[in-house]
Length: 144
Image 1 (cartoon, rainbow, N blue to C red):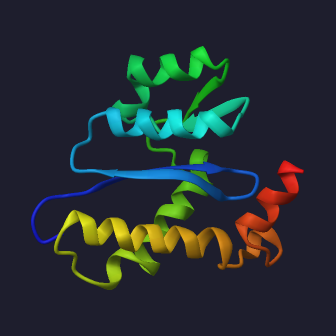
Image 2 (spheres, one colour):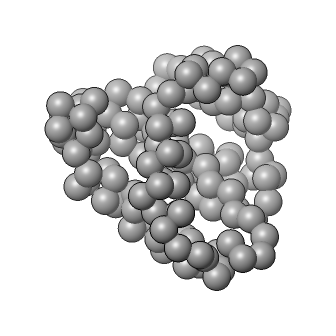
C-alpha cells in the first residue's frame, strides 16, 4: 500500500491446492492467524499442519489450537522455502496475478481484490499440477 503494510494468512489444502480460508491484518500478531485457523477447523480436519517458522506459527496460542485438535505440527526448516512449496507458489500467484498489478490505497480495497482473486483461484483457474483441474474440482472429489 502507499502507506503501511497488510499481512495475509491463507490456509490451503495441499492435496487440492484449495484455499480453505484467509484473512488480512495490519499487524503481524498471531491473533488473525489463529482466528483463521479456528474457522477452518470448524469444517475441516487434517492430520498434519505445516507452516514456516514465523512468530505467529510458533506462538503457544497457535500450537495449542493444533494440539487441542490432535493435529501434528510440521514446520519448515529455516530458509527452506521448498518445505512449503505449495504455499510459496500460492504467494507468487497472489502477488503476480493480483497484488503487483496496481497501487493499493487502503486495506479494504486490498481485501476486496484478494477475495475476488481467491474465488478465481479456487473455482476458475486451472492448475497444471492438477491436470488442468481447478482446486475446487479436486477438493470436491476428495470430500465425497
